[in-house]
Length: 273
Image (cartoon, rainbow, N blue to C red; front, side, top):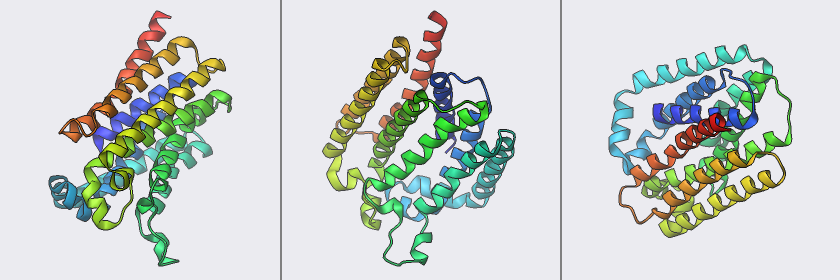
């Protein structure tokens, strides 16, 4: 969860560069929220994770009494920082936590036993995650900066929605067996490894198309678009190794590296240009 949180902070930093907003606490808030949400998700799914990743599940169950309060404190700190950003920043800070309740818990089943967890519904599950994080990654920096909405904001939102969607489906691959046993439908469980690889190709292609569209529309300059396309190409290379590289954990970590490479390239571009 800590690793994912740091990656999320880098994503927000990329968003701030693309949006052209000044330095603000948005990366720290997102990092704390991401850590809290994913830690609680690990705790909630410890029993089912025992099928796909017994070591991780054992660790979570052993230290649950420590992880849960740490996660709660992290969210509390995020909320305290967000107060300084105003009502919109505060709302966006609460947003992922509320989404997680609907996404991962069986709360909806209390109203209708036929309702499955959103987490179990094919494509909808990943859409919920990608939507929640894309909203926060894009609009929290805007809220802290007091900036106005613009077509650039919509481009950044679409970009991060596709990037998060791509990464989530890649991350679903190690959980395939466990997801099948508990009735969770993901692209890997329904279409297999080969189908997932083709889906990742499509998602990266859509990302490239959006970046080219933003370049054509003047929403982003050529050097920035070039960096984003370079990052998308890197992701495409990772996708090509799905099913052909034995260690999927290494591929997932390599996929996370896209954000670091993109951010460093953006900084280098800013210095040169």
